[in-house]
Image (cartoon, rainbow, N blue to C red; front, side):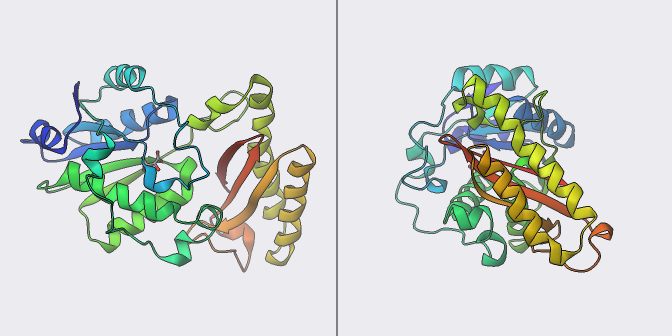
Length: 282
Ligand code: PAF
């Protein structure tokens, strides 16, 4: 595997290929990232991953500085998974000057849920993803990029960006990988103590219970069911931001017969100082 730090080196290593399979990450890789690499790999003629902790998507009070940076072990795992090129740019390479041109995704999708609780998050994500796409795919006829479904809304925001900018990139959404107790794998799980790691499984349990209740309910019942789910987590000491049932198509609150439409239950909550997110398609 080639490890490159500049856009010029990256393009040099990719020259001659026609369809990169790309997995963008912020590093501190877990089995979910590795599964994405393995899923994307057969869909392209060269496999690329990036590791870049993107300052633009962190609010000043968030964990940009403490976000775990584990390049050496990440590189070993990527190589073992069959990645051909690892792009690990330094901040000055991607942002040589303040990034004043930014992607502002549509507010109906990007200002709700995660976007509501993390204002500007999807501007930062969309901007860096477009920039990474431009680094990887410039001059390529087509490509495929893989994102994890744990960040459900992120996948939708990226998909819509690709569609609206007519980028010749297929977006693959990989299933969430989970620990034995159901906890969705996330780089931020590393912040949890052993005891919190056990408790953290309650988020996926809460989503499951809410999903089950929603399937037997009507849209008018949902706000009360969501409030109950939120209170139940809060009673266990969590600080929940949201637990909600939405349409998979646009993440709006559903109406009409619930049992007959594709829905997703999404949740975000803080356990101690660690903010966790998860979702479940029902
Ligand atoms: O999901 C992530 O790790 C990040 O949001 C991404 C897509 C790599 C952009 O920084």
